[in-house]
Image (cartoon, rainbow, N blue to C red; front, side, top):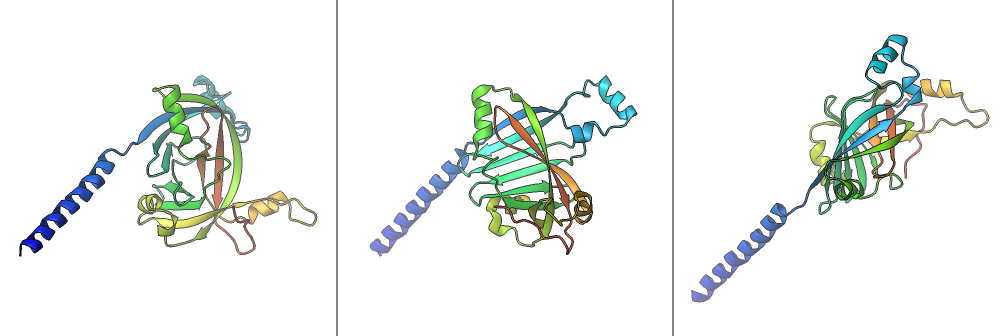
Length: 238
């Protein structure tokens, strides 16, 4: 009887110790936040403005350069990075989740209740680097010059976000879920013209902003997303 009571007490103490460790890790989890201001010029968008729009932007000193803030959250322990940019130019309000455990990025459109997921591009996204550099440089945020790159992509239907990581599964809960693949406009011999290939992409879904996380020089990727058509064969991303 005494042995059983001792085992019960030891079990309760062990569970208490485990619970204390879990609670400590939860409360002690470091989450960094920062803001980066991006000054950029997009010739495709800005040179396409009509006269009235150009005059309006001139009055706000935006004709030469545009500007957008991105709010960034990083958790080094859970290895994720979240980025929010408001709507600007032709770009929809965009929420990004980089899950470095699962190695996937999610572009989240809360208004459309849509998630677009693809593998993380290691050449432009480094784990947790950006906000940590901001914290080191200035507590008030960072302003950098930014280059604009335009890319087209198509979506593929998918219904199960769990394999793409816990953070993405939580962010995309009960949303329409798609995988995303870049579409390259081939210009080889006997290939369709750029205009005809563009028409073959299908119905446009929206344009989203994806920034590189580099504290010295940013690149803004304006990702134009289209619905796929049967005749288009997307190029799988690495």
